[in-house]
Amino acid sequence: MTQQLKAGDRAPDFTLPDSKGNQVSVPSGSDKNTVVYFYPAAATPGCTTQACDFRDNLASLANAGYHVVGVSPDHPAALQSFAADEALTFPLLSDEDHAVAEAWGAWGEKKNYGKTYTGLIRSTIVVDPQGRVILAQYNVKAAGHVAKLRRDLNID
Image (tube, rainbow, N blue to C red; front, side):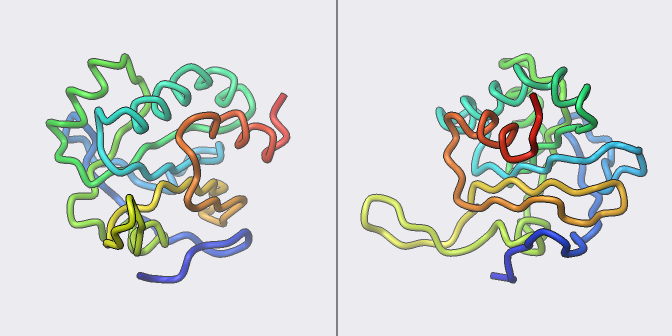
């Protein structure tokens, strides 16, 4: 696992396919900050809770100068189904080889029910338009995370 990012770091640039096969780059070249959230698997209970929370807060995040991108190791077709089933309108990106998750510190050792394994660490990293990390949070909880993120970013 690579080092986890922290505020002030330069986040590695990346381009990944979205649920429709379009290539999406971060930083995006827009004048908005980007919330990049890494989640383990589309259509699982925790990931659905988190994605719907971002969906429900998307307009207010956009009004505050942020856009949202979700990244998981799922295949684009799985992401397309997930987006359609949950009416998700922000990009869901496929990182099947988890290279981006590794580069961003979101891939590593996890513990679940007493077992240790390597996998995707639920994480949220906010970057400015130049790719500098504003905020990095690892091992976040799915439920209530967007409200905490909003508080941490002083949105509201």
